[in-house]
Image 1 (tube, protein in one colour):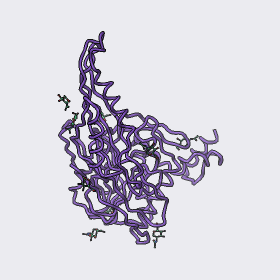
Image 2 (cartoon, helix red, strand yellow):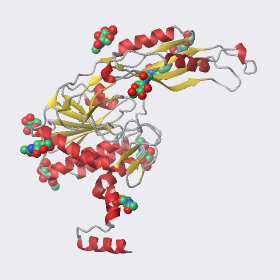
Image 3 (cartoon, helix red, strand yellow):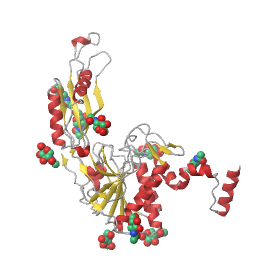
Image 4 (cartoon, protein in one colour):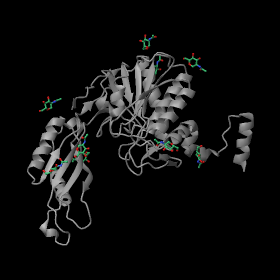
Length: 395
Ligand SMILES: *[C@@H]1O[C@H](CO)[C@@H](O)[C@H](O)[C@H]1NC(C)=O
Ligand SMILES: *[C@@H]1O[C@H](CO)[C@@H](O)[C@H](O)[C@H]1NC(C)=O
Ligand SMILES: *[C@@H]1O[C@H](CO)[C@@H](O)[C@H](O)[C@H]1NC(C)=O
Ligand SMILES: *[C@@H]1O[C@H](CO)[C@@H](O)[C@H](O)[C@H]1NC(C)=O
Ligand SMILES: *[C@@H]1O[C@H](CO)[C@@H](O)[C@H](O)[C@H]1NC(C)=O
Ligand SMILES: *[C@@H]1O[C@H](CO)[C@@H](O)[C@H](O)[C@H]1NC(C)=O
Ligand SMILES: *[C@@H]1O[C@H](CO)[C@@H](O)[C@H](O)[C@H]1NC(C)=O
Ligand SMILES: *[C@@H]1O[C@H](CO)[C@@H](O)[C@H](O)[C@H]1NC(C)=O
Ligand SMILES: *[C@@H]1O[C@H](CO)[C@@H](O)[C@H](O)[C@H]1NC(C)=O
């Protein structure tokens, strides 16, 4: 009762009064920045699975326009996708100068399956909570805070929020031709609020397993291609692949199997999709995989997509703690020769899962980190520790 009455009074006279009791206020982190969480939640309410980013792009672009950012939309074409679905990168800046010193980057798409947001006093849950809608929210609120404080102006910052990061990297590849040449770029992905010092390379290979068909009532007369594929994987996954200690280790993961036709026939073919996260030269790891599978009869590797090598990032000296990341990002396909940073809220340990989460307190801290980072680079007090290497992509 008191809370409702209080809210009515606050709204009527616009008084700076907190209606919740002190103990509740202290625990309800949302109240420290309700607009941040409302914007985050509105993005999470939109399904923007890779390939179907239209509604998210429109929502974010309109929001930026309402805040008086100049917004360019770059069409991204992908021959493997439905041409009737409009897909666009967002490039935004202040005023009319599109050549800015600092590029703020993240992505608008998410992995499937989509599920809607929910929250409690500590956390926000939902597809994209940290990968990467939480990053977009934090980045925008840091920029808006700095605008209100007159700490950024035309020519300082550009925003690139691209499509397709999770599946195709087609958005970032298209963005390479936007003809923007920042001095620095910062990409938002879940890094648990560490400055990322680098991340692994990555590539996908297919395993082709050839079995022998038989009637399912006499399965011993056949050779089951699916079982054979899984057995081959289980053998190879035990191996140690080349790795440089900086990136920790090389991992492989069997992520998809296609095989079999009908319920009464032993399958004679199966295709497995193996995702590799390489902590060493991709070509070297590929050779090791090929030779490992070569020793196993009836299975062979198909490689028909590009591979990337591990990379290192630049960091700010004597700022927040540093850590290497096990995953890959769009940065592996960004060809700009600028200093590159990778910092974000939330953890890769819940990204891509059915329990994706980001802490509200970490998001509020993230806004401060981003604001500090942007100001420190622009005003020249932040020293860059230039360890960064440029990606090396093997077509
Ligand atoms: C915390 O704040 C959010 C946003 O204002 C609100 O939706 C939620 O109901 C609050 N929780 C509690 C327990 O007051
Ligand atoms: C965008 O939202 C509309 C309305 O909810 C929906 O019908 C449409 O399928 C969505 N578009 C995409 C590409 O998901
Ligand atoms: C919007 O931005 C333009 C270009 O920077 C500026 O001239 C104009 O005053 C701004 N409008 C508002 C309402 O802030
Ligand atoms: C645009 O901004 C960049 C970076 O701040 C600056 O170098 C350049 O001179 C500006 N261009 C114009 C036309 O003002
Ligand atoms: C898998 O191997 C079989 C037998 O060598 C071959 O006929 C088939 O074309 C291969 N599949 C693919 C997708 O390469
Ligand atoms: C890779 O390193 C992680 C982190 O130390 C560890 O948990 C995992 O078991 C390692 N995997 C392999 C295949 O070495
Ligand atoms: C990766 O290994 C291949 C094959 O050994 C070699 O040609 C290439 O130069 C290496 N690339 C890097 C970046 O070390
Ligand atoms: C690569 O090969 C796999 C397995 O045959 C196939 O499913 C996939 O569509 C191919 N990808 C490209 C880009 O050709
Ligand atoms: C420059 O930026 C840093 C980091 O955000 C800040 O601590 C410092 O006060 C700023 N200095 C000036 C002169 O604005």
